[in-house]
Structure formats: structure tokens, C-alpha cells
Image 1 (cartoon, rainbow over the protein chains, first blue to last red):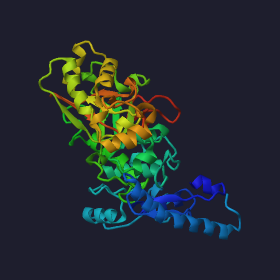
Image 2: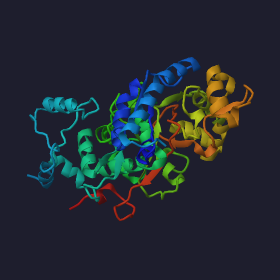
Image 3: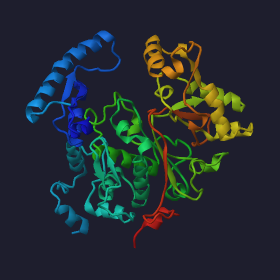
Image 4: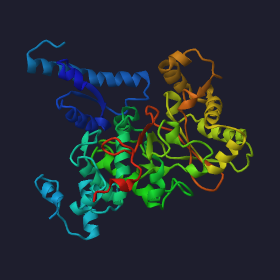
Amino acid sequence: MAQLTKRGLIAAVVCSDTFMKLGTAQAKVFGVPDLPLLEIPHPLGGLGIEKVAQRAEIALPQLINAIKAVKKKSGATPA
Amino acid sequence: MSTLQERLKAQPGALVECDDDPEAVFDLLCEKGWSDGLPVIPPTPERIERMLAFCDRDPDQAVIKIPPRFGAATPVRIAANAVMAGCKPEYFPLVLLALEALAEEQYNLYGTQATTHPCTPILIFNGPAVQEIGMNSGQNVMGNYYRANAVIGRAVRLALVNIGAAIPGTGDMATAGTPAKFTFCVAENEARSPWEPLHVELGHPKEATAVTVIAAEGPHNVNDHESLSAVGILTMIAGTMAITGSNNPYYASQPVLALGPEHAATIANDGFSKADVKQWLFEHATLPLSRFSQETIERRFRRKLAEQFADAPLNTPVRMFAKPEDLLVIVTGGAGKHSQYMPTFGNTRAATRALRHADGTLAKSVFDFKRP
């Protein structure tokens, strides 16, 4: 995701709340501190399809906001 | 004032002053997060310099960047961790060697540092340095007591935490971890092995000192006091290896089998080579697909491993490693009818490195590194 961001694409990482500290630290390490992390309740793995859908509903508005924020900042059309 | 001290003084935060009472030092290091939770030797510049006297590399040039922080592991920083762990200076070339091996891509240090899985590097040493520094390859080889095993493994672990930021909850996400994260350093008992040593099998000269690393779970014991034949002992080992809860069935992985010398002798006396052991266990350390949960069969085997299992009948054998040669076999330990099995992270491959000087020549002795 860091590489995609550096190439000018809009990228985001779905991250469960337990992993937010790791995700935040890794975004900084890879030089993309503003990489959007789409926070969902832990866990991400080992879920039935209904709970996956619930998490998608939580992540989707964050993704849309992330896209809007990048568009606003750059004034460019997202790839 | 030492030269190193002068250099460190110029780097903000590199030197910390505190009361020289051991408890005060330990308290401070724990507050800073610079420990594994056990007391350490204070890494003073003088002690670090004594460690660096056994290093022929540029002390400020990183030999590895340790994830997840990707901190630059320079010999100076590694030496600080080696001091903290309790290393003698002559151990330092082996600490550096192990970290160089961990840097090899196939080991997958990034994945293994941050994973929820309870893996840690097992360091397997071969060659003359083992005897030279008194590393244990006999009784209680995976246990406590022997300084070289304890502190070389610990120095590597401290570097992974202090330089790489493998800190529980933020950089090391292990669900439960393993006690092997304090130290997991063994030597092969070459004198009691009926076969060629691991490093020779992997292409290094017998006279080389070498380390082999792979991200392993702690040891699982195989007790077999009754079997009198190779097939008998291997049957018991196969039963210990064939488990549903390890990562190995899902990856082209390299689990580790550490045969006790008595088990190894019984197996070899029946004419089994090391390759025969691997082949036999490849064929017999299996579980029928039906032994996994229905969800695991559907979600992992049928979908993620579809090429092999999409339509496989429930009596299809699931192997613990993909090719016979993938099983790592060593002989270690002392008297007794026990062997050890280490499942691994799965997505990790063994890396082996021989001890060499900076100019690339093989090191005959760790004392060859000592500067006058």
C-alpha cells in the first residue's frame, strides 16, 4: 500500500482496532504517515460472512472519506 | 573517556546516565522498554568496546535493518544488546552471524516479528566454535544453564526487540508467544550424530562454523522408550508431527526434527540415512483431511489450497511438509529416549551462514576476530 501511495494511487489498509498501533507505526516506517487505516473491530480473520459484511459496512464510509480527503488535498481525480 | 563514549556523546540520546546500583539500572532499562523483562548487564561504552574488539566490520554500518521498525542494526547497537544479554566478547561474532542469517529474505523476518503466531528464531550452530566457546549440544540442550546458549540466543532476541521494536502489542502481535522468545539457541551434537552435520548437508565446509536459523515454535517432545527399530521410533515421531494446529500443513514449510542421539543411533543402525528419515516421515507424518474441522476443510483446504484439495476425498492424507528434503533434521541432546519436534511459522525458510571475516575468508576460530 505504501508503494501504491507513493506512485500516486489512492490506497488504504483495513486494520482491526487491536492492530491500529502497528498499522500507524508501519505507515510511518514506510514513509506514508497519512496512509488511511480503515479501522474495524477485531478480529478480521475467522469470521462468518455476516460479520465480514458488518465490518465492510464500517470500513466503507471510511474508505469514501479517505478518497474524498485525498481528492480535496490534491485537487486531482483519483486513479 | 573512551573513544566510543566520545562518539556517543555527540549523538543526542545515545548515552543515558543513571545510578550504578544494579537495581536502579534495571529499573531504568525496563522503564525505557530496553529489556526482555529479565535483568541485564548495563551496556556501558567500555563494555561495548570490549565486545567490538571481536568485530572486523565497520561499527557504524548496519548489517541488517530489523523490522518492524527497520532499525539499523549496526555492530555498535548489536554489541550493546550482546552486553545486556551477558555475552562474553568472543561470543560476539556468533551473535552478528545469527543476525546476518536472519536478514536473508527467505527467513521472512518482517512477517515473523509481527505475527500473531508463537514463533521465534531457533539458532542451530555447527562447527568448531561450538566447542571453542562451550556451547551445549548435550544434556538439556534446549533448556537452561549453559551461558553460551542462553546469552547468544538472548542477545539476538534483545536486538529484535530493542532495535527492531518487536514490542508486544505494537510490533510483536503474538497472541501468546512462547518461552523460547527469551532464548532458543542450540548446537548440533556432531560427535553423536550418525550422519553429516546440518551445515555440511546444506553446502558448507565441515571446518566452517555456521548457524542455521528458521522461525520455529518451542520444542514438542517425542517420548519413545519402547521402540527398538527405526520404523518404531519414526512411527512415534510421525504421530507427534501430524497435528492439526500447526502452520505447517498450509505452507511449503520446513519443520525441524531434533533427534536425541539415542533415537538417532537406533534409526541409523537399521540402515536409515538422513534422507531416508525425511522420506519416511514425508510419507507417514500425515493426517486424513477429515481430522481437520469442517470449517477449516471448507475455508482453507477447499478454497485457499484448491489446487490440491478442492475435490479431495476426506481420507486424503495432509502432509506436514511439501517435499521430503524440506524437513530439517539435526541430532542434539544427551542421554535418554527423547527427541524434539519444532513446527514452524510455515512461511519461513531456513537460512544458513558460515562464519567469515569481512574479506570473505572462512573464520577458523572466533578468537581470530580479536584485534590486538
